[in-house]
Length: 165
Image (cartoon, rainbow, N blue to C red):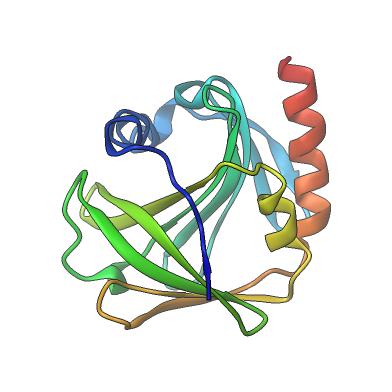
Protein backbone atom coordinates (compact mmCIF):
# COMPACT_ATOMS: atom_id res chain seq x y z
CA UNK A 1 0.00 0.00 0.00
CA UNK A 2 1.10 3.55 -0.60
CA UNK A 3 1.02 6.20 2.11
CA UNK A 4 -0.24 9.67 1.19
CA UNK A 5 0.75 12.81 3.05
CA UNK A 6 -1.96 15.21 4.16
CA UNK A 7 -2.13 18.72 5.57
CA UNK A 8 -1.95 19.42 9.27
CA UNK A 9 -5.16 19.10 11.25
CA UNK A 10 -5.43 22.84 11.90
CA UNK A 11 -5.31 23.64 8.20
CA UNK A 12 -7.80 20.91 7.38
CA UNK A 13 -10.19 22.20 10.03
CA UNK A 14 -10.19 25.70 8.64
CA UNK A 15 -10.62 24.47 5.08
CA UNK A 16 -13.32 21.96 5.90
CA UNK A 17 -15.36 24.71 7.51
CA UNK A 18 -15.27 26.53 4.18
CA UNK A 19 -16.23 23.39 2.28
CA UNK A 20 -19.31 22.92 4.39
CA UNK A 21 -20.66 26.25 3.16
CA UNK A 22 -21.69 25.07 -0.30
CA UNK A 23 -23.64 28.27 -1.00
CA UNK A 24 -20.29 30.01 -1.50
CA UNK A 25 -19.34 27.83 -4.46
CA UNK A 26 -19.40 29.64 -7.80
CA UNK A 27 -21.00 27.58 -10.57
CA UNK A 28 -19.06 27.52 -13.86
CA UNK A 29 -21.23 25.03 -15.75
CA UNK A 30 -21.73 21.33 -16.31
CA UNK A 31 -19.06 19.25 -18.09
CA UNK A 32 -18.96 15.50 -18.76
CA UNK A 33 -21.26 14.60 -15.88
CA UNK A 34 -19.67 16.95 -13.36
CA UNK A 35 -20.40 20.49 -12.16
CA UNK A 36 -17.41 22.79 -12.62
CA UNK A 37 -17.13 25.21 -9.70
CA UNK A 38 -14.83 27.68 -7.94
CA UNK A 39 -14.50 27.57 -4.15
CA UNK A 40 -13.51 30.91 -2.56
CA UNK A 41 -12.77 29.05 0.71
CA UNK A 42 -10.00 27.20 -1.16
CA UNK A 43 -8.37 30.37 -2.50
CA UNK A 44 -10.61 30.30 -5.57
CA UNK A 45 -9.63 26.72 -6.21
CA UNK A 46 -11.48 25.05 -9.05
CA UNK A 47 -13.23 21.75 -8.54
CA UNK A 48 -15.56 19.29 -10.15
CA UNK A 49 -18.52 17.94 -8.21
CA UNK A 50 -21.17 15.33 -8.85
CA UNK A 51 -24.09 13.88 -6.93
CA UNK A 52 -25.00 10.21 -7.16
CA UNK A 53 -28.45 8.59 -6.98
CA UNK A 54 -27.99 7.77 -3.29
CA UNK A 55 -27.35 11.52 -2.74
CA UNK A 56 -23.64 10.97 -2.12
CA UNK A 57 -21.59 13.95 -3.22
CA UNK A 58 -18.02 13.76 -4.55
CA UNK A 59 -15.61 16.61 -5.25
CA UNK A 60 -12.17 16.58 -6.87
CA UNK A 61 -10.30 19.84 -6.93
CA UNK A 62 -7.52 22.23 -6.09
CA UNK A 63 -6.77 24.00 -2.85
CA UNK A 64 -5.11 27.12 -4.26
CA UNK A 65 -4.25 28.40 -0.77
CA UNK A 66 -2.00 25.41 -0.16
CA UNK A 67 -1.17 24.53 -3.78
CA UNK A 68 -2.63 21.08 -3.19
CA UNK A 69 -5.23 18.74 -4.61
CA UNK A 70 -8.04 17.02 -2.76
CA UNK A 71 -11.06 14.80 -2.93
CA UNK A 72 -14.04 14.92 -0.62
CA UNK A 73 -16.87 12.43 -0.26
CA UNK A 74 -20.15 13.06 1.55
CA UNK A 75 -21.94 9.77 2.18
CA UNK A 76 -24.07 8.37 5.02
CA UNK A 77 -21.99 5.17 4.92
CA UNK A 78 -19.11 6.98 6.66
CA UNK A 79 -20.94 6.25 9.89
CA UNK A 80 -20.04 8.22 12.99
CA UNK A 81 -17.74 10.92 11.60
CA UNK A 82 -16.91 13.81 13.92
CA UNK A 83 -16.21 17.34 12.71
CA UNK A 84 -12.47 18.02 12.62
CA UNK A 85 -11.27 14.58 13.65
CA UNK A 86 -8.70 12.67 11.60
CA UNK A 87 -9.45 9.20 10.30
CA UNK A 88 -7.23 6.58 8.72
CA UNK A 89 -9.01 5.47 5.55
CA UNK A 90 -8.16 3.48 2.45
CA UNK A 91 -9.10 3.94 -1.15
CA UNK A 92 -8.45 1.92 -4.28
CA UNK A 93 -7.93 3.05 -7.84
CA UNK A 94 -8.61 0.15 -10.19
CA UNK A 95 -7.50 -2.22 -7.42
CA UNK A 96 -4.34 -0.31 -6.41
CA UNK A 97 -4.67 0.45 -2.69
CA UNK A 98 -3.72 3.70 -0.92
CA UNK A 99 -3.79 4.60 2.77
CA UNK A 100 -4.67 8.19 3.61
CA UNK A 101 -5.63 10.45 6.47
CA UNK A 102 -9.01 12.11 6.08
CA UNK A 103 -10.54 14.89 8.10
CA UNK A 104 -14.19 14.47 9.01
CA UNK A 105 -16.96 17.05 8.86
CA UNK A 106 -20.64 17.24 8.14
CA UNK A 107 -22.74 19.05 5.59
CA UNK A 108 -26.11 19.19 7.25
CA UNK A 109 -26.64 15.69 8.61
CA UNK A 110 -24.51 13.97 5.98
CA UNK A 111 -21.01 12.99 7.11
CA UNK A 112 -18.08 13.74 4.87
CA UNK A 113 -14.34 13.23 4.72
CA UNK A 114 -11.66 15.13 2.85
CA UNK A 115 -8.20 13.97 1.79
CA UNK A 116 -5.57 16.51 0.69
CA UNK A 117 -2.63 15.67 -1.60
CA UNK A 118 0.62 17.63 -1.67
CA UNK A 119 1.04 16.53 -5.27
CA UNK A 120 -1.77 18.33 -7.13
CA UNK A 121 -1.21 16.07 -10.11
CA UNK A 122 -2.48 13.12 -8.08
CA UNK A 123 -6.00 14.46 -8.73
CA UNK A 124 -5.36 13.82 -12.44
CA UNK A 125 -4.00 10.35 -11.69
CA UNK A 126 -7.32 9.57 -10.02
CA UNK A 127 -9.19 10.74 -13.11
CA UNK A 128 -7.18 8.45 -15.39
CA UNK A 129 -8.60 5.42 -13.62
CA UNK A 130 -11.95 3.70 -14.12
CA UNK A 131 -13.17 3.06 -10.57
CA UNK A 132 -12.37 4.50 -7.18
CA UNK A 133 -13.48 2.60 -4.07
CA UNK A 134 -13.39 4.32 -0.71
CA UNK A 135 -13.26 2.50 2.62
CA UNK A 136 -14.02 4.10 5.98
CA UNK A 137 -12.25 4.08 9.29
CA UNK A 138 -13.53 0.61 10.23
CA UNK A 139 -12.86 -0.89 6.79
CA UNK A 140 -16.44 -0.58 5.56
CA UNK A 141 -16.92 0.29 1.90
CA UNK A 142 -18.27 3.83 1.77
CA UNK A 143 -18.80 3.88 -1.97
CA UNK A 144 -17.44 2.95 -5.38
CA UNK A 145 -17.18 5.81 -7.84
CA UNK A 146 -17.39 5.36 -11.61
CA UNK A 147 -14.75 7.80 -12.90
CA UNK A 148 -16.11 7.95 -16.45
CA UNK A 149 -15.90 11.54 -17.73
CA UNK A 150 -13.67 12.61 -14.85
CA UNK A 151 -10.51 13.14 -16.90
CA UNK A 152 -12.31 15.40 -19.38
CA UNK A 153 -14.06 17.33 -16.60
CA UNK A 154 -10.73 17.86 -14.84
CA UNK A 155 -9.29 19.36 -18.03
CA UNK A 156 -11.88 22.09 -17.59
CA UNK A 157 -10.98 22.41 -13.90
CA UNK A 158 -7.29 22.77 -14.80
CA UNK A 159 -8.12 25.50 -17.34
CA UNK A 160 -10.37 27.16 -14.76
CA UNK A 161 -7.52 27.09 -12.22
CA UNK A 162 -5.11 28.68 -14.70
CA UNK A 163 -7.65 31.44 -15.27
CA UNK A 164 -7.90 32.04 -11.51
CA UNK A 165 -4.21 32.93 -11.47
